[in-house]
Image 1 (cartoon, rainbow, N blue to C red):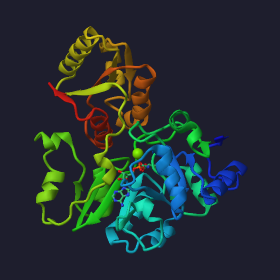
Image 2: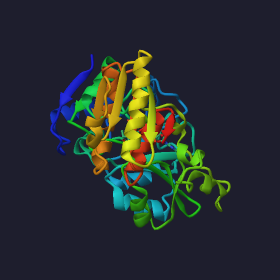
Image 3: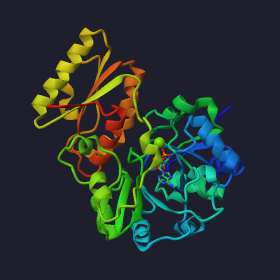
Length: 369
Ligand code: TXA
Ligand code: MG
């Protein structure tokens, strides 16, 4: 039996529901809860068996480490062996908030299952009042990946958690919709640079301004691989002064966020050309007998014919796009779409995180027009 608590999105560590959920985490059980990015699946980070419960429920590969969540900035020094100055500035600027810092782990601070045996630990202080209440009530550092089955889009509603993990976990705290919609930005400071291991809620410009160091993308991008315009980044980083350091978020190598149908991304200059190519792909798919889906910004929802047209955010409001993205991807599974064409969004600001998730969802199948 999975316990389900509905709570208001306010800071109340004394709420009976939060106290009960916190006690369950402290007792080694696995409980899902909202954060300001996506829903997380929490367990006591110090307890190996509890952490195993997360991996088992998600079906997550054991070599993909977890983020440890804290409710108080001062707890960082209990988890990290050292905190360099730039990381400290970033924590001061963005915590609580959607930023994860990768730092040298303090021996014995968390179970080695959490770090997948790495010498580093990923830490963040979420900005959601329910997450902060629950971590406070649990009284321990809380390891929490996104609360989806491994490979599926991350959950932005408690309903998504139920669909994916239903009876596999001890409880679900429903605090309403998550906020940002895409996961936290994961960074590691090394060699005088801020390496972005996963783009997310905090943008590269924000990192550079607050961190006072140059920012480099250390995540794979199909555009860089194909020699696109955004040629700076991982490859440039590889050639930079810092030859020994190749930071990676181990999780980024796995297929992720994917709807069950085959998805392609259509990108290029000019909305008319992009939409007409999308329509051509959709028509061909339908002729093959596919059930078709289209993912488009609101502005273009009326331009396309498909079995399921999902309007996701807007070209003029990429924050909204981020917020709606994972629910939009899940819609295609609900509607049994077998072929999905998605329109590319601008890769500015949080658009970089949106497109990172879309490329992964599409297995990097990109049509350039
Ligand atoms: O917004 C978020 O970060 C959400 C909410 C629940 O907090 N959590 C989340 O966790 O997205 P998860 O497990 O889905 O993603 C964690 C990412 C993975 O790509 C993982 O490889 C990376 O962080 N990571 C964790 N520990 C790491 C480490 N020590 N070094 C490098 N990457 C690490
Ligand atoms: Mg995840």
